[in-house]
Length: 95
Image 1: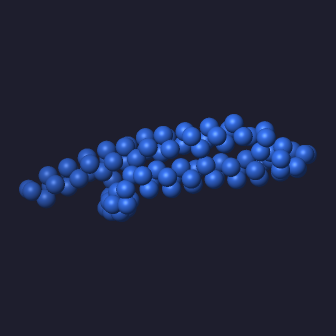
Image 2: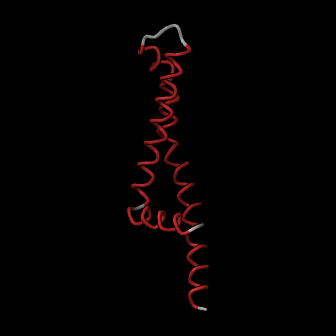
Image 3: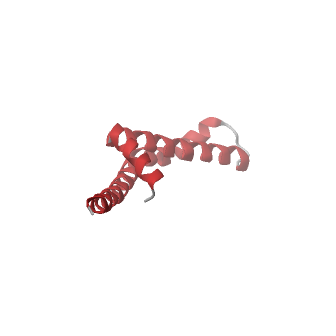
């Protein structure tokens, strides 16, 4: 982890885990939703929006419910890297 990544994660960590999880989950959910919407209008002859929502409702519910868990895993991975780097920096600063 370089200095830029270390400082960036420190700022994110200050704002809190809940905020990180909610914001990242919304970003992922919206990106998938917009991508599916664009794909629907490009690939499908039936451009009626009602059929898009009807066909993809179960996918949207799944994405909205499970994306926070996926983002939470990424939080803990990043937090682990941050703590390891913090230990290394503490060791090097003591010597």
